[in-house]
Amino acid sequence: MITQEQNLIFQSYFSTVLSTELKNNDFLASDFFESMKFGSPWVKDEISKIGIDNQGLLLMTLYSMLVIPKELIQNEFKSEYAEINKYLSTIAINTHSDYGNDKPVVNYLNHIRNSVAHSRV
Image 1 (tube, rainbow, N blue to C red):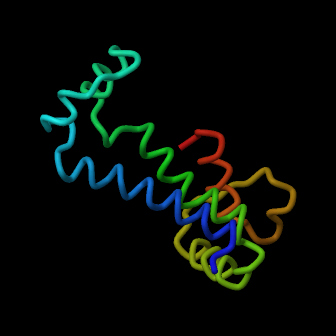
Image 2 (image 1 turned 30 degrees about the horizontal axis):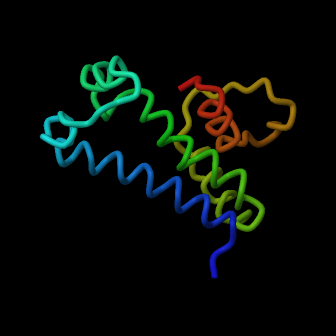
């Protein structure tokens, strides 16, 4: 039995995969999409213009991969998160942080999470 937290992570992941597969299968060029009726037809026109793989979807994908898991399972996987931060510290260049809790070690995952959560990516 999966937990509610795991279920949310899976659902977010599956939604991202669905969007990716719609793009991979050229859904916007399909007869099905062409025949779809939208409650607001202008939305369909805009989707046709921007496509499936757009900045909005990228932000939602990053949110589902970085923010949701961090909020739900970080405490369960503390050592794994620490290892990721340790790795990031070895490849980071020219790091500067104004976060008081980043001394002496910068919490890169926290910065990445905040950047995505506040749409600053």
